[in-house]
Amino acid sequence: MQPKLDPQSHKQSTVDLARVQSAALIIIAFAVVLFLLVQARFMLVSLATAIVLFSLTSAVIDFIARQRLGPFRVPDVVASIAALVLIAAALMAASGFMLTQINNVLITTVSFAEQAPTAVASLFGFMGEGTEAAILSALQSFDVGSYARTLAGRASDVTQAAVLVILFVGFLFAERIWFDIKLVNLIGDPQRAARVSKIISSIIWRVNYYLWVKTVVSALTGLMTYALAVTFDIELAVAIGLITFMLNFLPNVGSIIATALIALIAHVQFHDPATTIVIVSIAGVIQFINGNIIDPMMMGRALRLSSFGIILSLAFWGAVWGIPGMFLSVPIMVMLLVVCSHVPALRPIAILLSREGLPEEETALYRSPDRQRQPHGAAR
Image (cartoon, rainbow, N blue to C red):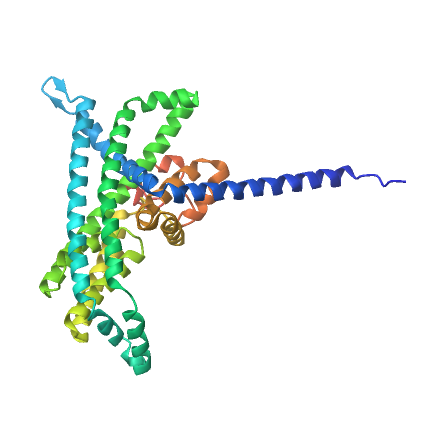
């Protein structure tokens, strides 16, 4: 006589099987998406950069389009074309300037190639002669010339990326005119479309605010570091200031790398520990004041991101897209935070990404920066 099947057990086993299948599908989908992100890295990085530039300039275009010249209003098309021309000119000028600085860095690196291993190994002299000799032998095994040639070959990608970004921005400007109509037709509900439009506006505002604050603070840090390099007559002063400016867009680790870089260059050039310590101390003070006092004061509560989440985002996008992914990691995290805050099923992710574990409600997402700096319960 066959035993009777328990309906409850059969139902539970079916549910467990469905969960296993769903988990397997999620893992497979994540692997496929990750593969596509890596394979299409160049195009996706260029597209993400174009979207960031488009978000930065769209508000400026709207402002220009609202201006009047007597009885005439500036057409939106004219404002978009003017913005595209300015972006194209700025990107091409920036790429040319970067290529020039990369060439100067490569020339100086090759000239320092012989003395750099000895100078770096001397830093470990307090650990004993054996350790210093081992480090010197390891450093001398690196072929600096081959790395320099590889970097010079990759430098041409900067111009190609700039051209691709310009093309993407141009098409985004062309599409922005019909975006609201497309959004309503795509969703089918004007109220839901308006809510999605507000979420997109919130993402644009937050990313723009973060980038403007970071640009101001990074520019100030880069100029002060450049002045420090000029004061001590350090070679590659312009390149050091530019690299410091760019590295300060990398949260938490960028300032450490920039300080270590100027310390290495100073030690290789002067071979004087006292001078190196003075330079590193001043550079550290500059980074501390700008990164821990001025930056949080200007940023306020506009970006309530978890520090641990920022590090994870930095590591993930750095592994997927390399250095460009590290620069884009925080804007991508801001986008995820805002989207997850408005989707009930994804709100736990927003809680993990937020600093205090309390992502702001929808009404708080559209406040001005000054009002977001106010603590909870403050007078409105």
